Length: 506
Image (cartoon, rainbow, N blue to C red):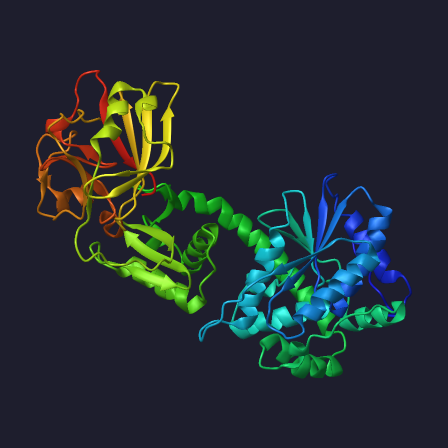
């Protein structure tokens, strides 16, 4: 529900508009309304309107959040202004202090926005709403920036009055109200607000548009903000239809990786799709995994590389925080992390006293308290969890503290599934990594042995994961590849209690 104003000076109309908009949202009984409060004229008007709404609806909770970026010498004064105005309105105010990342390749605007939303969204639960004071001129700025970046319908749809968040919803009650109406209303009501001096710095894109471009556009076409918002709404409608179509088709292209719990994109039949659908499906996959969408040029390069690369080629593309890899005709997405290269293969020894309670099925015998550290001759192990399941399976979680490639381990004593015999007293148990590809192995499920480099392919283990896979040894004999197989000569064929080991994070 929205109300359009012909006269910006119409007394009381903005409060009525805010109240009507919020009332139409079917707010949950336990809803908290959280306002992103900067103290500028836009958020001041919204705070005033929210205070009037709170008097009508005291059953809801209310919270104003001022984010202190530390970017201005006036930030403390502004924080105090917000605290005082909140008291005047009878609404609680929280000051969140954040640190904005800076760097030669970082946008200060984007980084400040990111940490601002992170700080504010910490105050939200599932039924809560976040109120922001974006208005019609902000919408025009967003559309122009989308055009500058060459974005499609999704970008040109700009901001919606109601948008879903990870927790709750974001509401923009003033999105169909012009800047002039807001400023006139603030003046009429005698609202005190701050002026951020950075708003006059045209090195920032939004300020450049606000100060230099939009006034000239409005001088020529006074209603351009309104008509541009109309175009954004049409783009949003078209994008919603497109999203529905992609949402119906995308699951057909997704599968679970054989050696991962994540979803991967299969390339079987992908080359036969039209170029438009290739782009739509891959965009949908990237977005479904929580990553920012690449540009059209970047997306075309990604599609070309994943489709034309040879089967044994190592396709590895990084776009922002997203890493894209191809293996076994499937596309994997990861969040980028700097990975140190290990100079030499790592290993660690499992203290024998940890296996005694597993063999006997009684973790109470373990004299190491949970989260304590046991010291062996080779490394330290953090005991993170002890558990006896209802099925009688004893589990013990440990993590090597000194081996950078070592993954958290789960040791289980079980009478079911592939498992190795427990070590004899004279056998030292160790976990090793990065075995040579020529190492000959004999998985329990195979009639004869093969070289490790062949088994990597057979078990569909991606190359970038292989250095993290641990191998259990008794003395110098290979016992199992963790999460993959038990060696034929160590498999427990009877119904007796055997050792299972898994890596919880691979």
